[in-house]
Image (tube, rainbow, N blue to C red; front, top):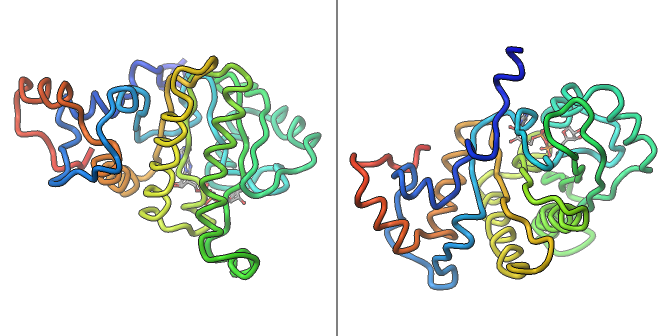
Length: 244
Ligand code: APR
């Protein structure tokens, strides 16, 4: 029973709007006009520091490898929590290309599905030699985009991402957070109002240092709306310095 009590439901995962309104996120000094404030975005993107295997939502994304047969890090955590049937299903998928995504059931996990994606290996020079230096960023953005597209194709409304490629694959967390925050913003803007539109995209970090990086990126690319600021002004206390 103890394990079950540690599950995190959607209502417990704060959106960007809620983080501003409770002063857990403080506005940046200056706003980049290329990224105007949007209530739709601030209500649709969420951030939490937790173990992604505990999230009781529609789907969680796994930072897998090309074999899809499990590994360490979040891949290991997801397979351990899902149980042996997950790797059995994965073994029938014939692997996954870097930047692509494939979906499976979730078995003993609280979520409904797992979307497995393979991030770029940042220090793998072969990826750079093949194309221009943006190759790792292009592939990383593709991981998030193809995972969200796959979730929509399966009618899933809430999806959580770990910080893909920023562990074993060595992608600098600040560069990754910058790229994927913009990618998710762009995807939600482009797909707003379409049938099967996603309701929540959650960034689920495991390291406190990652939370602070995402908090900084959110203040730059997901600024508060006037309503977010109005409510924040009414709430007591000085707020934190984006150390969520
Ligand atoms: N919940 C959420 N995030 C987690 C969890 C967890 N339980 N465990 C680890 N993480 C975070 C790490 O802190 C890191 O920020 O996931 C992020 C991605 O790190 P890795 O799991 O190392 O994934 P990645 O860098 O994409 O490397 C993938 O590692 O485990 C192998 O099989 C995997 O070969 C693949 C490679």
